[in-house]
Length: 309
Image 1: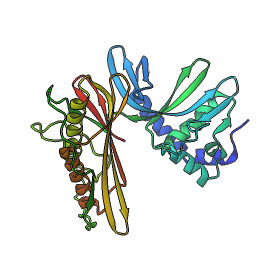
Image 2: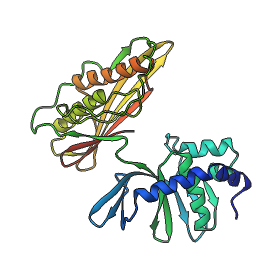
Image 3: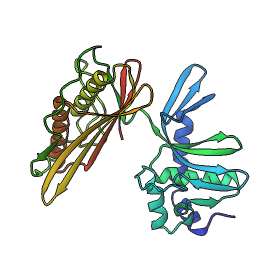
Image 4: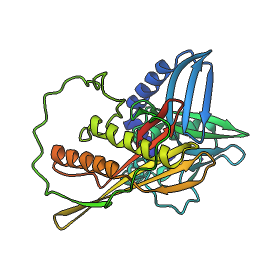
């Protein structure tokens, strides 16, 4: 089954950009001879002998069943309505009436047509590239983003110490939105001074590196105290509920221990105050707050990596 006319028109519209995307990717990983994929961490690593060439966040995009000639998008058979950074693919498919981007499965028949479909999908999702990895006789396609772009790290706190007392309250009202400050002239990004603790990069121009780092450091302290045997991941979730000109902030902390069990932890007063400071600063800069901010910590040898989801 050939890909439809609507797909062909949309692919032709973006053909030059897709070619440029591929050229940049080929240059990025030039000469690599090994590809490693960690499904748990959703990381793909390109290596040249012992040299690390590129590490990318890998979002499962589609699976191609070779024997059936059938591509199944990431949401095939799912009842979940959780948002995904790949949702733009479906949105653009709806906007341009491209059935291949809106149906959960597509009869592509050949690997070449599947590549063409996933190349367009990765471009529409804003990914930096895509890669296909064999799984038995089938292929799984992943959209790739630079792993370092939305990540940072935080050092582990000193060993020992008791679990911090929980915050007195986990909800706080926010002040009315102020007019955002005019943007400063564009200039190269600057990193935190070397005397400050490792900082997490912001998810966007309205989040402060300093405030994100403060939230991550205190969350790390709470998790280490509560789970002294170690942890795999932790998640700080901040929800801002805005109604009728008023806004309330809620904070939650969860972590997966070394055995794989999930724990709901009580945020400390300092953690909650750090979250309030982060959201208040975003509120001051942009005149509004993101309805949801999610900060993920992944355990590393020296502490934790930080990712703004």
